[in-house]
Image (cartoon, rainbow, N blue to C red; front, side):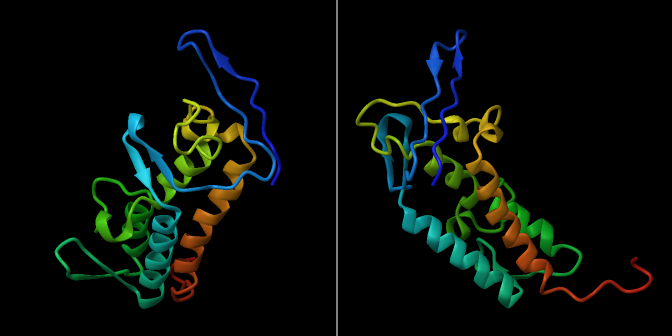
Length: 160
């Protein structure tokens, strides 16, 4: 909704971070030069699969086997899926939601590289927190973990 104009540049890398204009929309990304291509439907599909896994209490690993989201290990398994680390249970099924969400936002001004635009501050871990949209994106990611926590039993007296 709101715009963000970073007013940042780097003399070292000779680059300027582009703004994100008001009411910018994320769109399918197809940037051959950067070897990045994905659709917004991919993000939606991964989100839906993650929610489904949370509510079923099971993820499917890359061997097709069910892995239970236990009280002790479930949060780690979800973290590896959502962040899509090398130890993700199944990157092909659950994708790279968190990271490619950053990329979609970072490239919303030039998703097909028609203007040879650099990615915005959301595409760089050193600058992403400057953009207010960072906090909305991370609130959504946090909500995924909260959804999982809502499926767990209450803490016992011994656990508190």
